[in-house]
Image (cartoon, rainbow, N blue to C red):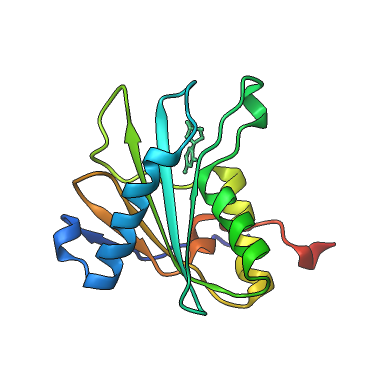
Length: 160
Ligand code: THU
């Protein structure tokens, strides 16, 4: 038996002011679209904005349902929109922000497990890593160079 180590690096910025202007603008877009979320149950509005390789910016917000499991996260709404509008076009950078109506919005949130799985497959099928920018309304911002880093040992299409 031997033990293996899995590790990865990510960037931590004290605030969005430290980002380069294109990243700051994308994160700002993610913040802006939180008003379009439909989140009457959780009151937790999530906004996502992605820059595609063709230069287009696509957004998504969480869309909830009285039948709770029917709700869908902002990230997967975004990926569905992107791949419907621009099939096969890779996502270069995806920013996620949020507005918590009943609490603080000052720390980055990161994609849920199902979204990580979907992000992994989006990367795989378009052949390009998705840079992830995660930040709240203020406070620190995290940057991951590849969203697949968030789902080590993923189950992928290769296994089928
Ligand atoms: N949510 C997202 O849209 N993205 C995330 O990264 C985390 C959670 C949504 C799901 C649900 O509508 C609400 O936030 C609270 O979990």
